[in-house]
Structure formats: structure tokens, C-alpha cells
Image 1 (cartoon, rainbow, N blue to C red):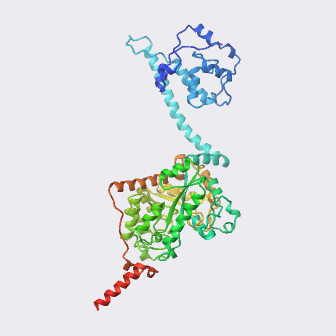
Image 2: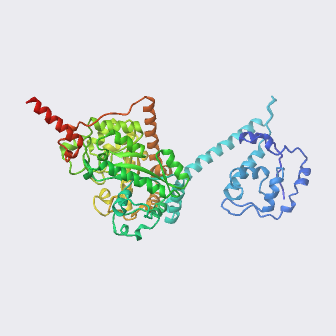
Image 3: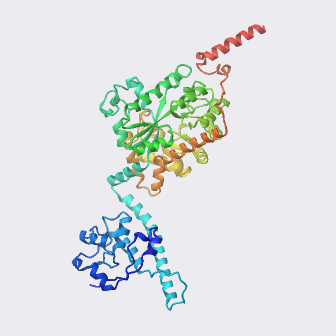
Length: 563
């Protein structure tokens, strides 16, 4: 059997590939026969032919062992030489020096073996040199065209493979993706269920149980979360809502909110092997790398502040990283999207104190959440905020016309702001009735992606705070099925899916943190704004405010003196 054995120098090949020349075998200058006396390829005459590009056979073990020690440049029965073996081992395909991986390594080796030695000393033109130069130019052009063509063909083929893959195969793809990127959900009301069902007594509560089999959780349409299902859903980070009802405004909203913050922290502390409390973008990524669910806090409703920036700062020091400016009730400084609000109220938006709240959040590094806010409040906040905002659990108003969803003109403003709309799974916000499907949620994702862009859409299901969920997205374990369905859609690239899962939120969070650092460099001081107690007199239940009572008393005494 004939063998090609050009014995070319490999120093140039090493330089082109970032290898030290002295790491390569010495240039072989011995006569052809002497080389083959050392190489002795005869024992391998019976080796099988080199594998085809789609073959899964390995190189014969004894031949591979020989290649590792042989320093000749022979073709070794079509399997290449030492240089081929080194190329394959560097590319990570050492075991499978076969199929495409082996053949690519062999092609590189053969091209390099065929390259003439480089001599940088000046010489007279050699006959045929121009032809050889053109020959190599043609080879280079062919290789470039082949690379470009493979990219152009490879992308549609990859998309075709996604479309034709079975559900099981697509779920495996999703699992791989969510191991690389944390799936971040913007809103879960589980802490309120803890208060309702077990009175925040977490010591005796088993979060690692399947709560679908535990009363009273299994009797409630508002229960969708437990530790096993969070792990099956591959949730990488969860914002837990420290929510208290609007009815607590002017009463005990502040202490109740602190109790909800406290119960989340105690729950996370109880399960350190699965949960990790996080207060920064980096801590989310660190927890995900450690295989834990990053647990973050959001306070849902500005009424929890008690009209105090000191309380806002205290919440931040307690680990809260977003505040929803309103819930379903107005505050003295912001109006909500509640249907109960009159047109005159919703037209007010943020007053001066409300704007101070937003700017103080910017200074602290707390994310401004505009879910539940009125349209005017939303627009005011987008103008005032120095940092990107989020809608932690809202969907597209164009597909379901409710004031809780985001209209298209605001979606465009969110894109300009660099913010994020995290899509809610509540059926009433998806189809405007109690019945919805997984594909209906995808319609909202597609709409927001089309209007605002792929950089501005995320997930904020609202589990444990909704009583109607779409079929296919019944609880927190079902997120992978959403991504598996999106894999069938050519318009969602792998990069888009990573952004949707969590990279968009990570970007927003980092930008919020950067604004806070910038304001610190500007020496921006904590704000001392306050709400004038006398302006609370027309607010529902404001008479329960001590400050208002005192202000009214002083006002009355002043009137008496003026008489």
C-alpha cells in the first residue's frame, strides 16, 4: 500500500495555531526508507479503512497508541499522523477521532503537511512559484466559501432540527439551556399563602413536601408552589412578594410588610441546600452556579411604606430589591390601575413625593416596579427614573384589554428606558377570561418581543396570587414546557430564549446597580421629603394617622387663636 510521507516542517503550522515550535516533533530529515523502518506501518495493514464523515467507529486502539509516539508524517493507512492526533486531542474529540471531528483534524493535518517550508531569505524567482501562489489562493478562497456556506446552511438545519425534535428532545435542550442561564421569575405570592395557611410558622412547615397532597394547600386554587416543583421547573431565581392588602393602609401595613419580609428570610434560611438569599445580580449568578434557587424580595404596593422614605430605606437594608409603586389602591403620592379609581384620580399620576420615592429607589439601587400602576403614574415614573424599570407581572394590553396590562405605546417607552415587561400567567390577563392555554401566553411574549424587542421581555407568572392558570402552565414546574414550545418557533433564537429566561433581568438589575453607584459618586444624599399630613385629610381612612391627628389638633388650636 502506498503512503504519502512528505516530511515537511511543522513550525509554521505551530505559529499559525498558537503552539510553541519546540512543543512539536523535530523536523524529520531522514531518508524515506529510514523513516519507515522506524515507523513500521506493516502491523497496521489490516486496520479498517478510515471512517466516513457520518460514521461512529473509533480509531483502532493500537493504531492510536502508535500515533501518540510516532513522529513521522506518514498517512498511516489513511488515519493521518501524529499531527492529526494532536489536532484532534486539542479540539476535545480525542475519543472520537472519527466522523466529522476526525476528518476535520485530518484535513488540517494534510493541508499543513503539504505546505512547503518557509524560507524568509531573499531568493530569485523560481519557475512555477506564481502558479503555486495562485494554487494556494484558490484553496484559501474555497475554504472561506465552504465556511460561509456551512454557516448559512447550518442555521436553517439547526432550526429544522428544533422543529422536528420530539417533546422529550426539546425538554432536554431546555434543561441544558437552563443549566447555563438562570430562569428568573419576577413575582410569586407564596409568602402570603404562608401567612394565610400556617400563620408564618415555618418551623413546622415542610416546603420540601408535595403540597398538592397536603391540606389546606391542596384545597386551594391559589396554590402552585413548593420546593420539589420549583426544582422540576428549573427555576434559577424567584422574587417572593412581600404583599399585604390595601385595607392595611393607614393601619398596620408597615409592620405587616416587615413580617412578610421576615418570613421569606426565615424560609430561605431553613433550606440552605436549595435556596440562597440574593440581593444583587451577581448573587443570582453565584446561586445558580451553586445549584441553588436565588431568593429575592419585592414589596408589592407603595402603601407598605406608610408614606415614609425612612421605611423605604429600611426595606432596602432588609434585602428588598424592588417596590411595586401601587397595588390595587391609590396612595397619597401615586395612583393605581384599579378599576375603583376614578378618572380624576388616575390622571394625577405621581406627585412630588412620589417622584422623590422613585429617585430614592434609584439612589439605593432598588428596582422600580410599575405593575398595578395607573397609566399616568407609569408615564411619570418612566420620565423621572434614572434607571430601567420593570413590570414584574403584567402582559400585553393589545391582546387583553385590561388596565393591568401594558399598552403598546408604553412598551415602546420601556424599550427606550431599557426596562423589562415580565409576562403574567393569570388567565384573566392573558385571554380576559378564566380559560387560557400555554400558546396564549406565548402570544403575549411574541407581541411584547415584536413591539419592544427581545431585550425587554421576561417572565413574572404571579403563581400563588392567581386562581386561574393556563392549561400547560398549571404550576411552577411547567416553565420548561413553555420553552420547549418556543423552541418550535424559528423567530426565537437561542440567544432570545436566554434573554427571556433571565439575561434580560440580569442586565436590568446590573444597570440599576450602576445608577446607584453613579449617584453615590455624585454625592447624592438620602432624600428627606415628607407628605404634608394636612393633605391626607381627604384620603380614605387617613384619620387613623397619628401625624394627621396631631396636625388637625394644631390646626384647630390655631383657628381658635385667630378668632
